[in-house]
Structure formats: structure tokens, C-alpha cells
Image 1 (spheres, one colour):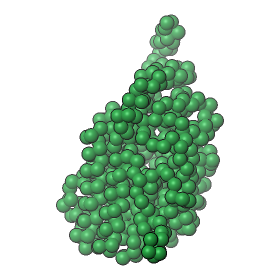
Image 2 (spheres, one colour):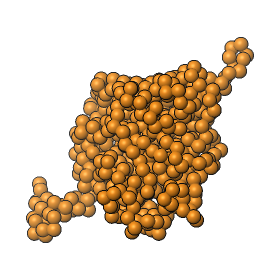
Image 3 (cartoon, helix red, strand yellow):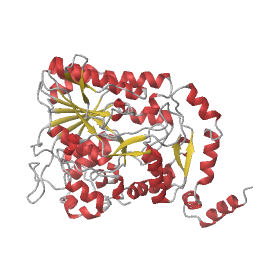
Image 4 (tube, one colour):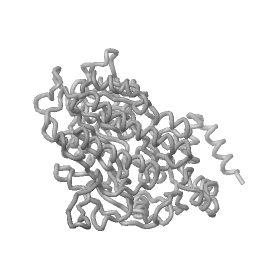
Length: 511
């Protein structure tokens, strides 16, 4: 895995050696050919391109494909733009020509401190990586430090000052396990997520501006049962006992406090769309995998975060990290849980498509299922194991959920806009493994096993089982490959061959 390392000038403008660098060196950005061609050919994406001084694409470069709309000069607020999905989306929208303002209180970075587990990939400070992007792209992303849930008047003043055409709302605690960790985390999740959404909606109403609100939701609002067929996109067509036909919001079946907060968001959206005529799009997203996009790979300081711990690491990213480090893949329960998946690059593209295709004022909330494909967890583990040679290790499930479920999901709304998603069968797994291999010296192996439990029964079952946390940790540690161990020793030796040999000898002499 390689990155382009480019010099920056103090004025944050592109120095002569950088002009058109993205165009001249597009084939050397460290992205695999399949992902690169997929990113460049899909609607809502934007090829790396240089710009004229007026901010328009240079002659010969491909313009915006996001619904064929003119984005240049239009302001978008990206709430939660420092996070896992928010950061690459902010870059993507900036690359498309939007004037982007990131709004964030850096709460996710603070949770890293609480959990004593950082991103596998080193992520730069907001000011540092924004400065790099502004220099490389000749665009300007701005940053506003703010707690959206609790600084209402600050948010309202920002909206009135910037007069954005849209607000992209990522500013929510996004991890189901973290939301179940304890009473403090449960209360924080509801307080932060629901109050944040309420602040956004009431501020848009009070501003008296026509602003499109795009919210990143979750497939988890539907639950993981069956709707009697494909899960529709937000609404169910039903026949009432009177014989009258209605289209109603799909019943909510949250599986965690996090998912419950998203269900509450959905009810608020329905009210504000009907009562105040707000234009709202709610994106029910699947499990995100991957870490990089075309834009985050333009410079190492633009790197996106990669969470691998049991609270924030999504299942596929955890599997890929474990495989890269010679650790067994930890499957919860039978592994018969079916989940919907989407690559991080497709998150960015779908947001752009949603912005380019807003509902009209007075329309009901527009809902998209933002998913590419579905897989059973055990099948996913088997796929990763086949590709990497990793072993699979079943452990008790910390979640209170069915051991097996079907999941058939409609995603026709985005498909109808020409979206062609990245899928797991396109060999992108190796590229994510490459990221994990490069930074595996940063892994805290004691953070891999579950530490959040849905209820006392699940906690007791997990701890009482022969493969409880401590035993499993010992097994995982013992399973680490000799190659990985030797790499750690080399880093500790820091080029001192004698010191390296002494450490190797000491390990060989262990009882």
C-alpha cells in the first residue's frame, strides 16, 4: 500500500510541482486498478482533476456526474465530518465542487481515549488534514468546532451565515455495541443522537431557508427479520381492515439503543416533513467496510480512520484486520446473522446522488436503502478465510438477536439513478488487508474480544462459556503468526541486529 507524499507551501496553495499532479500521477495513487476504475466510472464519483483558478474543471477533464447538476459554489454543511463516513464524504463533495463546511465536536476521537483504543490507521488532526486537502485540491474545506446536540444557537447562527443548500447529518454516535456498554453510554447515545437531529430540524425551520437535509440512517431500523419479501425502501403498502390501501412507514424493530435512536430520528423526519414542509432524505445504510477512497489516498495525511475494536470495528473490517495479523476470525454465535454491506466509497457516492436528487418541498421523506449486497456472517468469514488462509473461531454472541435470519433488501432507488456499487467479489478485500498489514503494529489485541453485552443474560453466557474473554484472548495471542511476531521484534530492535537476536533467543527459551 503506497501513498503519494507531496510538498505543501505555507500559503496552503498548490505549489507549481503539484498542479495537475492528480492527473499526471493518477495511476500511482496506491489504489488497486479495480477500485480505481470503479470509482471513476460510477455515478456520483469524480475523477481526480486539476482546476482552473475560477474553480471549474480544466479543459479535457470529466465534470460532475452527481445527477448532472451544477455544484460549484453551493455550500453544504457536513455534520460529523471528522468521522469514519463523514471525512471521506466531505472530501468527495469538495471534489465535486461543493463548498464544504465540516461541523464536528471530535467526540469520536474522545471516545478513543475512553476505550483506550485508537484507529488502526493514524489519522491527522482536523486542521492538518484539511490544510493538506485544500493544498492538493485547490478547494477550501472549512471547519467549525461545535456540539450540534447542545449548541443550538451556534448551529442556527452558522446556518443563517452560510445559507447552505443542504445539510448532511452524520453527527451521531454510530456504534451499536458502544450504545449497549453501560447506562452512561446508553443515555449518551440517545441524548447526542436525538437532540442533535432535533437541533438540526428546528434550526432549519427557524432559519426560514429552503435546505435539503440528508441523514445517514441504518438498515437496523427495520430489524433483521422478514417483511414478507424484500425489505422496501422505507414504506410498506398495506390494506387496512376497512379495505383502504395505505403506504405507511415500515414498522420499527430496533436491535440496540443506537438503532432505537435512529428510529426516533425517523419519526422526527416524518413530523417535520409533514408539518413544516422540510425536504428530507433518510439513507438506511448497511454495514460499511473498507477505509480508503480515491480522495483519501491522495496523501497519507488524508487517511481515513479504521476501527477494529469490538465496539466500533464493523464485522468485515474486524475480520480483515484479524486475517492480516494472523489472528483467528471471531464469529459471534452460529454466524447465521445476515447483514447488508456497502463499501465506504459507495457511501460517498450515494450521498452525492441523494444531494443531486432532493425531494420537492411538501413531499414525504425520501428514503433509500443504501446497501450493495447481503451476506451471512459465517459465509463472510469463510470468504475471508479462503482469501487469506485465516482460521475461524466461534465465540458466544454478546448480542441479543436471532441466531439465524434472512435479509432480502430492495435498493432500486439508487439503482435507478445509475449507481453500480462495489462488491466483495471484486477483490477489494486484499487492499483492505494491505492497510491492516501496514499498521498492524498499532493493534491492541486485548481490544478485539467483545466488551459490551446486550443484557445480563448475554454477559453471563459469554463469561461462563469455556471460550470466555480471557481464554479467547490467550488463544488469539498464541495464534499470532511467527512472521507478525518477528516484525514486532524488528521494530523494537530498531536496526540493532544483536538486540534482535537476543529477543528472538529469549522467546525461543520461553517455557
